[in-house]
View 1: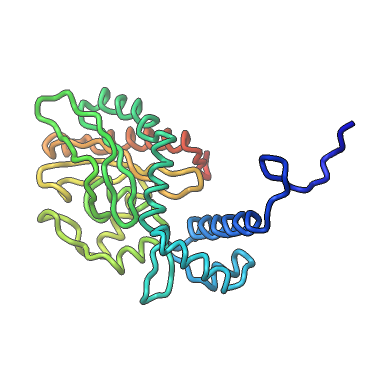
View 2: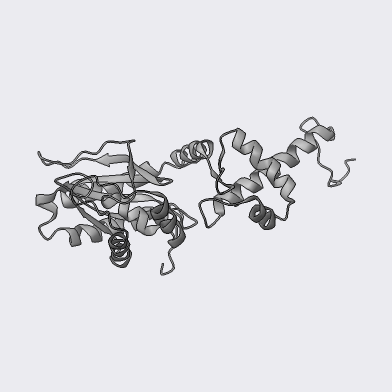
Length: 277
């Protein structure tokens, strides 16, 4: 005769867990709670007091956890503000996780469709904190075409792919970016005025896509739209890019609608549901 489940947890060999195992399990659970709370915070960084209130834990416990995560490079700590944010270790894990759900693979048919319809190069970029990078591209079949450098980091204020991401960030995130980042000129027409950039971002949000006619690279043009993750945070952007001479002749509006639709389709496959969907 077998007895029913008493509710007591046991280890894999049937023995009750030791005190050490229980403490380890509790520590891991708390660390995960803190990690998820930082990842879900509205601001890019957060303090110990706010974390403690959010999680219902003591500040001493939270401080012990975040110090351990900083030592492991999973969190970064700003000595000036005394606040924490996800660090290089978390970025590595996050990028690995995103790679495993194969966002480039999800985006691939949409990039190919964009190239088939526009005959220009299509790209997928991912946000990397205050920068972004190209993950993949499908090249234009035309003899003269754009080709981007995969893996290189670019600022968020210059170029179609970057502005699409920046415009899709929250107001506080945008303000923090503008307060902390110099609007460096990459070409002679890169937007360097803060107010003008904010107007450009608002225009991007209204029409659903960004336009760049030589802001990041002289002679290169692009239209781009943001891609969102399931919880609504901007993941990156999809763009169509080519020589200014081909994209500036009445094509940006047409291509803008196409990249907007493609980015929305990829976002839906990542689990994102917009308010009007």
